[in-house]
Image (cartoon, rainbow, N blue to C red; front, side, top):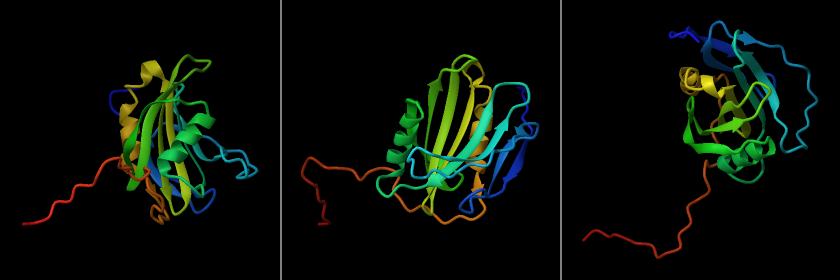
Length: 184
C-alpha cells in the first residue's frame, strides 16, 4: 500500500431496507457485483451483503452487510452472537461510532488460504436494521490499512437514517447498596 491514500466517497445504493450509504474508501479499490440472494432471515445468522470492495493488488476486502435486528438483546449481544456464528473470536471488543451511529467495534484473527487474516468489524443498529461493516487483510498488512478502517468509521453515513432503537450494552447490574448523595 502506498504511503498516501487517495480516499474518495463511495456511494452504495440500497439493496434492502432503504440501506443506502456513503463511505470513504481508496479510489482504486474495486467494487464487485453481488449475486441475487434469497433472503433467509429465518436463519438468525444470515446477513445480506450490501457491498464488497477489494484492493487491486492485495487480499484486502472491505464489506458491508445487514439484516433485521433481533427482537431481544442489545447491540453487543447481537454482535457477539453473529461473530460466534461466523467463527470469529474477538481479540478486542468495545464501543465506538460508525459515522454517527453508536457501534460495537473490534478485531479478530481468522485463518485463510493466504495465512492469518486480521478482521476488523463494526456493528451498528439504525431503526431496527442491523449493519455490519468489516475490513479483512493479511495480518502483515493490518497496520498499513489502519487509515482505511479509521476512514470507514468516521465517514460512514446512511442515506436514510432512522436512529438507534436498542441499547449498545445491557443495563449495569448492582450487587451492592445504592449511594445517594443529597445536597446539604
